[in-house]
Amino acid sequence: PDRVSLFGYAHLPQKLRHQRLIDSAMLPSRDLRAELAEMAAEHLTAAGYCRIGFDHFALPHTALASAATRGRLNRNFQGFTEDPAGAVIGLGASAISCVHGVLAQNEKDIRAYGKAVAAGRLPTARGIVPTPPQRAIGEWIHGLLCHHQASLSAWSGIVSRADAVALDVHAALAPMIADGIVMLEGDQLRIAPGAGVLSRVVAAIFDPAIARTPSAMSPAV
Image (cartoon, rainbow, N blue to C red; front, side):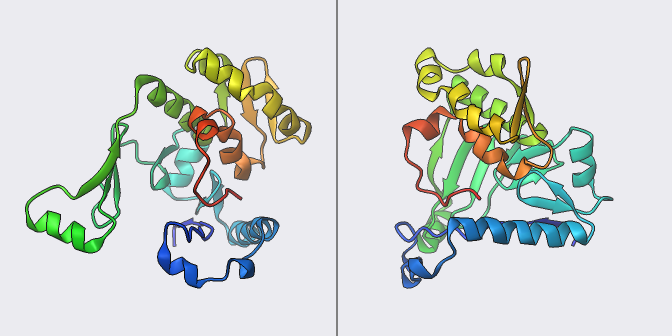
């Protein structure tokens, strides 16, 4: 294939009943998950793929690889892409659409989804209309994930004083700077070359929503 999206298995038995059949103790540890992810990445890069972001791989001749090298990479709900479109329409049960920042998810239950469609109704089950500050933070994080650099003063100008104090990003960044994962060059925060796999972990430091809400998702590798 021209491109590969490489995702770890997300074990969420509290949300997905069929996963309760799996013994959680038999699943790989976080350390082993990281080792497996890096092993897969090494096989793909050895086969000639370019590493894009933290979970995508593309052959050098593709538009995705070209967008990454030219600083035109984009990211939507489905992952990294060269497509600059501001709207993604999800079709089918549980699919998520994003139209210029507004998120909407379809019914997860296929019967409820089918009934809504048969009745001529949009099968939307829930959605989020972000506030202007939320949208601005999302765009800032988008730039960090796609380009591996962002302005700290721009972030400070977006978040509230209370969120800035609660997050204390400089303290959170200190061990990452010591480990060579990120670099501070004046106002610019840069993710070090080769540390892109941890870019989602770096970005999480700057997201007030993560600080306020315990995550119910599978951990990042």
